[in-house]
Length: 544
Image (tube, rainbow, N blue to C red):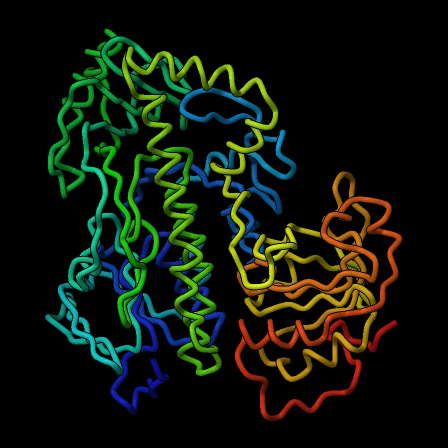
């Protein structure tokens, strides 16, 4: 699909229109702006609800926020409060058995996440329009036109691409004709923030004959409760306010025997165990991200976190397409990389629902999971699944290198300009080439992509535990933080990571040809004007 001229003079309102201003849509808007795309966000609600279904996010989502420099904006400093202890299907275990893992950032209401992302996207120049409700679309080979209902009346908007970030009921998904197969809801459950009920904490939930309940204090006199009664058939509640506190209190009393009807609720909502996934994440010039692409039983903050990662994967690619620098097929890698992640998300949340919410028939399964979680290998596997730290995209040429396709973990570096880190180098949303062996050939090979890829010469500081960069002489990192290519010292291979052999290997033999192919694969053809000083490095000096 060829690039088109998307200027206002050509009748385009934006390069990309994002429908939905939840965390996923706002994250995508910021990513697109970092990549140089003009973005308009259309949001149905006139103002944020102030409600918060989620109270945190996973370790991998935390890394995504960190690579854009956003963590200090959450009000807890450079590092957020995290929980080492988590669960899988209600069976508790220590997530830190997996190096770098934790159960997630805790105590951060979703409205705080939305506020942080909206401020960031707005600072970057995203045009966020509230009270603009999407009602339909038409697309052709050159553009997408959508209809929105605004406070001033109906409007037609034109863009090169439209992205649905509009939730599980996604009007964009329906209007564009995406298939959305899966399993229908089998039960209805409730979520509420209640006041004056004096509840005892049930952080990981309490299973009782009539169902399961959770309770956790949010503030003085305010508790977050989740109520999952057995035998409550699902209802079609498109308006979250349709459920009443009286219904929630009655379900709570039926399960626990406790009467909370004398209290009140700041807000109440309902949810189900519906599990569905779009068969494709792109149809022509319309794409789906987050809950619009996949819905599931809430478990461990994975929904918000997966949506944020979807946005980080798509944003730089779509921006490159509208900017005209993308190689053929780049946009299709969004589906290729993120659809399998969505499949595993649905798999693990369905499994957790069976273990956690089932009645007596699930007791043998719970006993089995309890036995299995006595083994560290099982803990590491499940911690990787829920945290998202096990995600590794299948990239060409990466079958024999565990770094390729994986996300490069935070690593401090020393350069001629001073100390920096792999995370800080990604703040601008560009590709990063790390020259770790002071090799002019590496820098020269990437010079023609200097408008899209920052080359930094430096050395990683020592770390405790496994050193994944042992024997690595160069690393090409995509804007989303995933490794696209590596070079290793002569005599070192991927199995040397963390060993004396890897650290002691000769630093000769960089694969310049492979680097050039990878640069073309992810960043397009080199710029026609590639005049640079041979051997120069973005750290401010020639190789040391």
